[in-house]
Amino acid sequence: MRMRLVPDNTNINFFQLARVTFGGSILLLIASAVLFFTMGLNFGIDFRGGTTIRTESTQAVDVGVYRSALKPLNLGDVSITQIFDPGFRPDQHVASIRIQAQSAEDAISPETTKAVEDAITAVDPTVKFTSIESVGPKVSGELIWTAILSVTGSIVAIVIYIWLRFEWQFALGGVVALAHDVGLTIGIFALFQLKFDLSIIAALLTIVGYSINDTVVVFDRARENLIKYKTMPLIDVLNLSANETLSRTIMTSGTTLIALIALLVLGGDVIRGFVFAITWGVIVGTYSSIYIAKNIVLMLGVKRDWSKTRKPSGNQFADIDA
Image 1 (cartoon, rainbow, N blue to C red):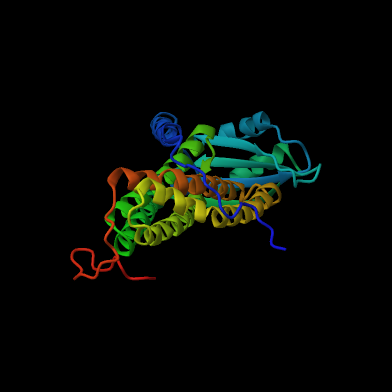
Image 2 (image 1 turned 60 degrees about the horizontal axis):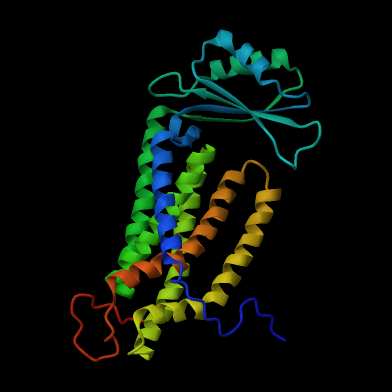
């Protein structure tokens, strides 16, 4: 007996609430842009430059005491955050001390790091320094541009592939869906001021790949149905294609989310930001494949004569099966 998460012959009208789904996504993208430009992102040490020292102690962390101990060192902007995690032992108290870069080229010196450690040890003799990460301002600036180029380059490459694989209408639908996924992910990081570092850039690239894979599955079935049902209205073809691939979409996204939620709960605070970004990306990526990309294709329209034998012009790779 085969288990079915979705009935074989679903007939869901995914365009019925287009004003709510598509319009709601536009409003959320606008809200994400406002949050980005007003609140900004909580950039990690990778992008801001400086040094992050992670401490662990059997005594409860008192942020005020730590800050007072470091004040005489005149280190400038110092951020001290206590870290909570369900996996920690009852006597395991973890904190993160972030110190701004002290010069235009380098993060804090080894001598300054030693002074910080001595100051914290003086107020908490049980403290241990489990990790130290340092990034200079010049390097952090280069990393910002590299991150922007990597995300932008991946999206451009995907658009070119879809354009060659299908048609430009599908390519535009795909890029709008990807912009939707990346934009909402950045928006939620700005809203909750979650740490945004290089691992989140890796998560964004993962989201882009996952989302476009889901979108291509729907597009490929739509192309087959456009050839098979030559007189069926485009809106009905797109709805049929989404329904026919719905079981695969739910199964793939569901099993992925099971693994991600397990990592989110049990993986620890070190990878929590990365896992949260991918978890959110899988959700919005699945949503955009069904409710965003198809809407763009419907708005633009698409040709219906792919089955005719003719000399290719313009997009010579549109009929190649991969």
